[in-house]
Length: 126
Image (cartoon, rainbow, N blue to C red; front, side, top):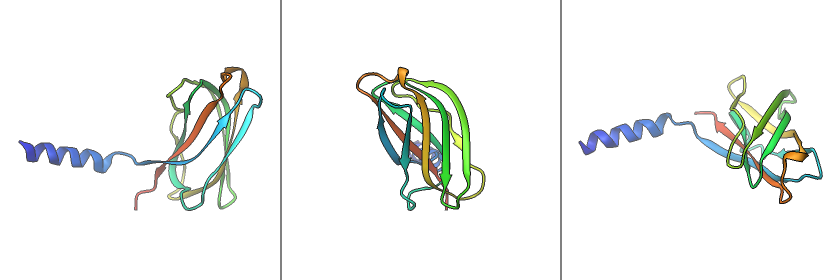
């Protein structure tokens, strides 16, 4: 019985997506735009999303800049609550190295303490 449980757990972990932090920034109610610069060594991913801590944030637009110069712009109109995240944004192609992510948000939704926005990416499996 224990062997079956161990085998099941290892299979679940094997196929569970691996997310890593690519960068973060503290956003405030004094601005409507911020940038997260990504280390090229950590930037090769197949999907990304933004997570939010400390305050709600309503995202308007995301602009991803890839190392090869290609841009990707997405419109979002999501209010992400504290502890929440945007939808997963799947990136086309096998390997996508991200240079930076610019994002625009509604500053009226950010509390007086600001919000911590973190960019996370799903690794490209070897």
